[in-house]
Length: 307
Image 1 (cartoon, rainbow, N blue to C red):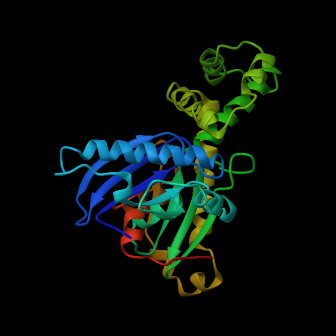
Image 2 (image 1 turned 45 degrees about the horizontal axis):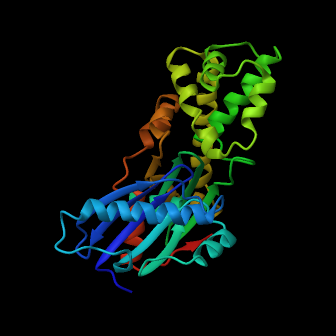
């Protein structure tokens, strides 16, 4: 396996990001592309990864003495959906153009990057949501079950919750608010029938793109929107506490009490004002991102165990 050039991928339900490094760890280029959730659409995820890698290589052309081909690159991808063994094996069965391709969970890549491979807790809140605690070479995951049955506090959850509320407001079960008006205006609908018709075939990504409406409505003083954000923050706190108190032995020896906690993802900063003060003070800034975590996983030949 050649590691002269290595690309780390952070792939989620809305986008994927690639970072190209040389053998000395110098960052040569970065690139973005579309969704890379292998549980949702493995071929699309691979196409997005290839595109992001091509963009990173193109960005690097002014920094290297010769052209870099995809066949020159070892890729390790932290991907949404990689926590599901069948999704991971199906994805790895696809033909790819790289010298080497390895896959880990986007959650694990983010955790390794955030804590530089050391023990710690990572909660991610973007299009989806999930959490993990890495301790003594073992990951213990919670959440990340997808919008249909989970992903509380995520952008997709926020968007879907806004839609559910809007339908209740149409039926005069909930009071109409700024969120109600903004959502209808954004989608150009004026009846529940039109709204339902528009929602047919909505993916988590599509619901996630409605989350900014909740956020701007909250900024405008909408109590319903603020309530949704408070509900999401409550879930993130509960998720973190569950990770810190995962097993009986960690409670007894109290080693997890000092574990650092990072919250990352597109909505992490949105939830900060809605978190309990004691919890917010517990949070620390990540050392690096999921792309770097994925690269470190490859370079260190890190062997991790999933509880």
